[in-house]
Image 1: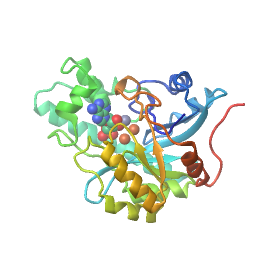
Image 2 (image 1 turned 90 degrees about the horizontal axis):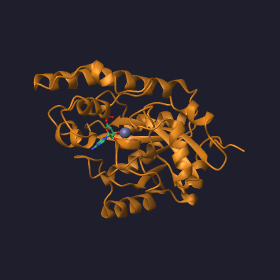
Image 3 (image 1 turned 90 degrees about the vertical axis):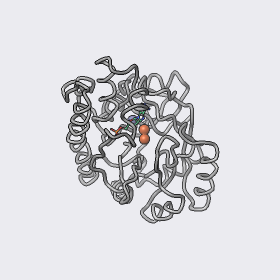
Image 4 (image 1 turned 30 degrees about the horizontal axis):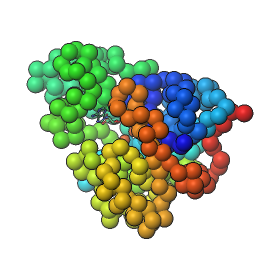
Amino acid sequence: MIDLHTHSNFSDGTDSPTTLLSKAMAHGLTTIALTDHDTVAGWDEAIAHLRPGLELVLGSEISCQTHDGISVHMLGLLFDRSNPELMEMMSATRENRYTRMSKIIEKLNAANYEITLEDVLAELSDGATLGRPHLADALVTKGYMKSRDQVFAEILHNDSPFYVSHYSPTPEEAIARVKAAGGVAVMAHPMSSLRSRVVSPESFAAYVDAGLDGIEVFHRDHTLENRERLLSIAAELDLVVTGSSDYHGNGKLNLLGENTTDPEEFAKLEARADARRVVTRA
Ligand code: AMP
Ligand code: ZN
Ligand code: FE
Ligand code: FE
């Protein structure tokens, strides 16, 4: 079983990379990708704790925004992390997430939520990418709400008056940098039903021109109808089809291996990287 999109506590997941790998083996996964938001900081721990029987695909879920303001998540997989341009792009996003968080907190304070940046940072593991889920956790800790889900549903969703976006590259820029670093680019949950706006079916051709390798089709946020639509787009544009859990530990209901990637599709994807970078332990 191949699960190509998961998060650890190096972003907004709640399991360490070590725990994530143990759970992956317990769930019968044979291949797992670690794709924390806008960072590769969890890679070393994952490499160090990999055991025989599990293959590790290293990557990151890169936050992007189109010119018309649509939020897109791009999975970069199997790239060379010594590529300076790709690392600079991710670090610009991570830094801007702090300014953005302060702006969201100001809006919440104006609406009488007593919360500080320190409260939010207390929910963040060392070296992790800051995100709305940590703010949600802080609001839960303070007793304002019961769960991350409730906070997102009521006040932190993308259409909320409290929402602020952060610097992000365009999907084309992210694809170009992942490809220049020798990796492969897969658009995550392109038609997520949880998002108010998603890219149009017509826009995929331009992403393919930019170098897009695949699209995530099998994902809990996709309706059956959208899976069918995405499968036909993939067939038309010769895109690799992936599936994943987008596991976040206790941060979301998603369970490891609940959606998976066909081994033949994964083989096609891996062959598109400029070197064999899947990590294994003998
Ligand atoms: P950010 O990157 O800071 O804009 O936060 C987006 C993150 O919030 C994504 O990684 C999602 O996994 C997470 N998220 C979105 N909706 C929810 C939800 N309802 N419950 C928990 N996490 C969520
Ligand atoms: Zn996340
Ligand atoms: Fe995502
Ligand atoms: Fe994700």
